[in-house]
Length: 434
Image 1 (cartoon, rainbow, N blue to C red):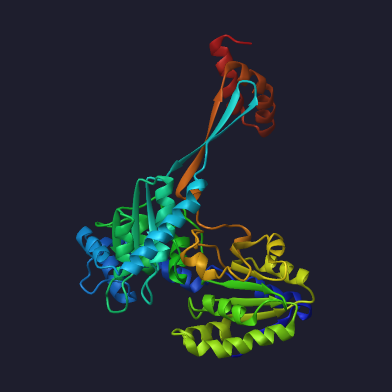
Image 2: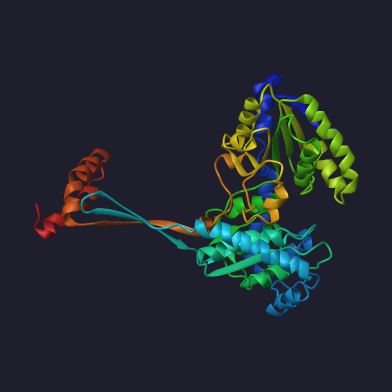
């Protein structure tokens, strides 16, 4: 296995920036193509949606868009007992992790008689995009739907593509039935995002679209943003591992391959101050890789998008990780708990030998819908708060406005906005106040 290896101290500023500034945002060509698909669906409705499903993939063999409730119920009834048990346990943990996230209203009095309330309310209708096609991701359905349910969203809509043969994942349908999702539609990619954003004859538009997806989904989210809310643009799933010589190379190899398995475009990085340790990890990848079903995908991801960064010290490795701002960050060091507290930019952090990234994907309850491409420096995981909106409510008494009146008058006059001054003054003229 050949994985690109760099010595961080020897990188030019330009080369380092190329490593750090991998973008979650598709290039201009893909964004333009996605916008054209969005426009087709916006103007053409169901007919354009079915045509796009045929042209780009993701539709059913018979062109049916909505999954009937009976089909959802049947999928759940036929689900293997061990998979249902896993769904139940994962759901319980996700709910447990997300219930404390529901925002609480806040009130502050800035001066006597002037009260500012900050109130949060759940959305009325939300669309959850669940990846599909090459693989089924019922876990992503749980991660998108459960925060919305905890938030109290009125209507939750799921859309997910069929596979290349036009078949719908039975496990995904079962998960939707298990969570009692209101509506499930079979469509994927940019066309699904457009349908959720603008609606068709079959699908009513939503207020916000959440959930992970490929580059086409990301490009479409950017195209519809402004007409509908979106969670965040996200590119291929990625991971960075910080490790020192006390770590087990076999575990590090497994953690790297775990994330590379997501797709051939997934960036995976190991940052370590020990070059011999890095070589031991590569040797373990060579040994373990033949055991895995998606070995070719993993091999491509590691050879084309993998990185080993050698740093002069552990402190430098942590500094590099904070600059990189990975979606998933794993810390395997002698003092992993303390070192993890020094990480400031990552979507989800996994600490120590007993915290594989797959635990977060499926079972811990933490959300796995995360920012990629360096956006973890500014965004966090999908949360209950993302499924609602804030408003600020300002209540003033006469005495409160009187206190603020000189400030309003002076700033309004300074900006040349005399109607702003009048809006405050006239209340005292009408009321007969000073």
